[in-house]
Image 1 (cartoon, rainbow, N blue to C red):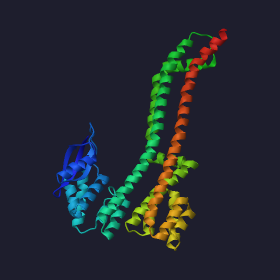
Image 2: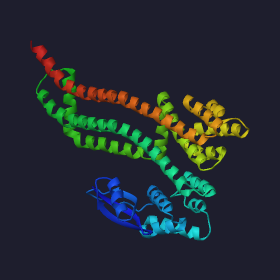
Image 3: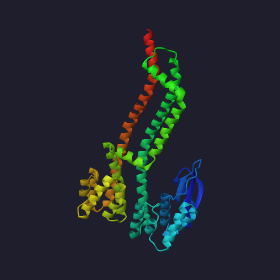
Image 4: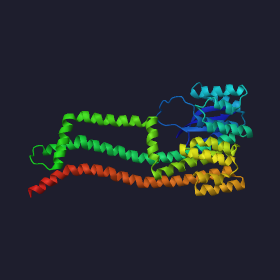
Length: 391
């Protein structure tokens, strides 16, 4: 496999393309040449032009590598800018360097570009500025993003198969309605006495023969309009509210929200933020109802009540998380226990996703099969009825 590699050699970043079977082999080859691997991306056989946008994940990985190699923050950002060129990422890095040369802390410079750096990223950098361990803080943030991306990927993967089944089933039904039934209905056109099913097919066949193009265009247009509506923020918000009101799905939504909440609080606590500040920043990751409950919980915590006794009262924990938080308060390892709580929520969510796919996919297959089987049954039922009348 061919990789596009960014390597650090003699204090300078170099880009090259190398063939290797894995990233471990790349590291060994570069190490033998006195270079250190910064990032590696597998090259595909085709390329698509993409809009120049700032890649936060890649920036974070390369910045960590440069800082660990001994470069100062300004030197590291300048190195990345020289490597990036004058694209969209280069403009962002130039603004970063200008802010740093003005004597501003990195977190304040990042805060001037909220379109590229989320609040959690800025808070992580801000907390690291107090301790002086920026590389470690960025590592924790990158790990945080990787875990959340893995959870989202599992949810997306669970929805791919049902969407494929719906698409294929819809295509088969359109083929039966606009090609098979009109051809089949001509068999009954010369008959005088027809059973109801044959009359229905003959009516549909005549309708398709006379206005089939208009009907087909209307169906495709309706599907396209529905897809366009589903992509609007207003319709998506309305459908999500209806979707999440289903009792079982609402519990899964709460579980996913708690996973993000605990992992974010653990990340910020490990970076040096206070508990209240970490919870206030993590509140933006929760849905509106849970956000209101968290605001009330924060008031109780400010009054001196414990975290492990407050969150359960407002439905912001699970039985396992409650015990872990209690242990974290007693041992002083609250950040670690928040991360473990997120891991337990991850495992529970994995089981929920697996159960959902095991139940939903067969039900969907049965539903599509009943629709297609019903159409096929209507095609042949008149023949059976006519054969029965001839006996």
